[in-house]
Length: 116
Picture 1 (spheres, rainbow, N blue to C red):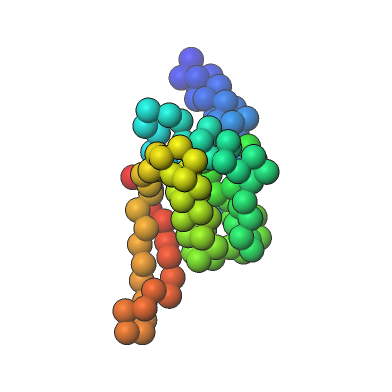
Picture 2 (cartoon, rainbow, N blue to C red):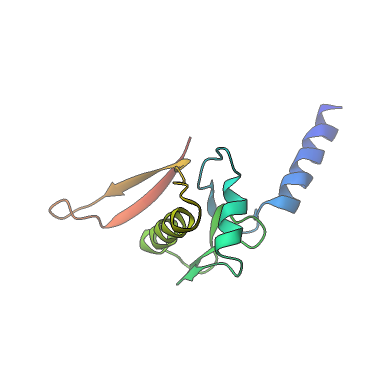
């Protein structure tokens, strides 16, 4: 019974989420409105920055489809937040924590995402 339920849940996730590409999972928290719907309305054709892009399967996922780096993902995050705010006056809050590490003089060299 438990194994069947786990399989059903996995299959449901596989249909609705881009599990075939690396990602940090849901990027923005849902509030009064679902984040993926706001993103889909603002970017109906998606948004691509080098190797990162908004998933067509679930717009609240930014997938790494071709060797994306943190700058690529951060570019998409910032554009989503700005465009959603401009259109709806809703500020999307991050569900992930941005962690910046550096080797030289405190300049951000690398960005990583941590899921809560």
